[in-house]
Amino acid sequence: MFEALSDRLGGVFDKLTKQGALREEDIATALREVRVALLDADVSLPVARDFVKRVGEKAEGQAITKSVSPGQQVVKIVHDELIATLAGGDDPDQIEKNAKLAVDSPPAPVLMVGLQGSGKTTTTAKIAKRLTERNRKRVLMASLDTRRPAAMEQLAILGTQIGVDTLPIQAGQDPVAIAKRAMTQARLGGYDVVMLDTAGRLHVDDELMAEVAAVRDATGPHETLLVVDSLTGQDAVNVAENFDGRVGITGVVLTRMDGDGRGGAALSMRAVTGKPIKLVGVGEKMDALEEFYPDRVAGRILGMGDIVGLVEKAQEQVEIEQAEKMAKRMMKGRFDFNDLKSQLEQMINMGGMAGLMGMLPGVGKMQKQMDAAGIDDSILKRQIAIIQSMTKEERKRPDLMAANRKKRIARGAGVDVSEINKLLKMQRQMGDMMKKMGKKGGMKGLAAMMGGKGGMPPGAIPPGGASPMGAMPPGMPAMPKGMSLPAGLSGFGKKK
Image 1 (tube, rainbow, N blue to C red):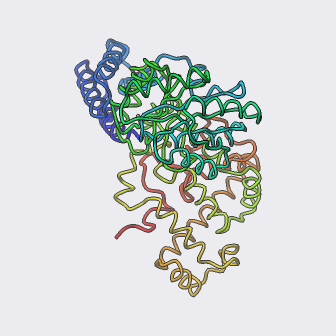
Image 2 (spheres, rainbow, N blue to C red):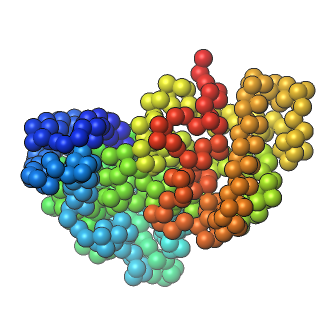
Image 3 (spheres, one colour):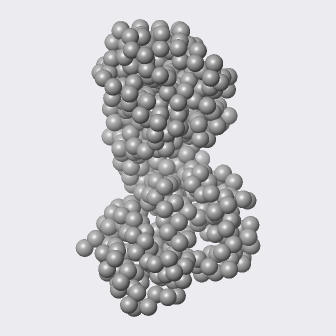
């Protein structure tokens, strides 16, 4: 998300930071380009105008033009204003609360509203899964959509997939009656949260609003979440205004943010509606849902990365016991192909190379370089396929890799022997690096890099700029300033 805006702003700020002292006309030119970049990203005109005005006021005068690093000072001002635009002026404590769902008093109803086709039912299931797994809540889902064919059955199927209970379907009931039955069953069954998935329409109309308002009045929801498709751009903002004005919403969930390279809806939503974006959908999988933190998003837009989010992803995916066992093995120099395969699979589970690159400071600019070199998630899958073509003994003992074994593995994986050699080199480099790291920082330091006990606290960046283990591809311990392609991946599986 935000790729187009990030590229445009990156170009503007590259020019500024390369200059020494800045003249007022330099700042004015840059701000004009920032305004065009925002409008191209589908940010609403009033929001773009106010944003540029605020930046311009802070960037005027001696503080910037005579600063030691004036270009960087302008970037900081833009960064701060992006956070202010996305957060709506909330303090850090309120921003933290906005990213959490208010579901503390059981059974807490969460009302899901929105237009048809926005991804409301899928998002309901994603939130239910998140509350169940992360917050240890007992969740009951209920479909109130009596209009769309098989809407209730769809939610029931999703509930089975994610292991969350759904309200039994009873034909002939209206949405309010279903909602009341869901609340009664939740109280009797000891559920913590009730997810109420309402019907949608192709457009905002009086009948839709009356139905949603009736359910709201009958259940008194702790949260009323509006689900909108970010790909609809400014129309998403208009929908949010309508729902908030006529029903009242507590927050917004933006879906398909992974497909929205512009991100204008996200930048306009808070400023126009005054309601926080609580969650964003970033993929089709049931766990592809992220909390929305304005400071992290602002950092990603400006190419500063999101190390906190990266660490959190690593901590979610890495099992502590497994990480500590692997750390002990690595300290003894035992890093075999089973370990390498585990690391590659963690990368894919954490969003693949593209998702992780966007969270690393400055590395987002490498995306075009990577695309040109043919480096994508297919490389990781190919590396896993090579390892799977090995025998159990070969995975445990990389030193067995003689020429005849390499040829057999290459035939089994459908690759050239040269790729087997590159994978072997990667395995050796990773083993050497982890052994040195273990000796230097001891068990605690190595376990921290693996995401185990004593792992990095949120916001911490390991020495040398390396990211937590499992969050970077093997063979890429740290990104140099020149952002050259990692030795372990450079040329691996390059498209011909």
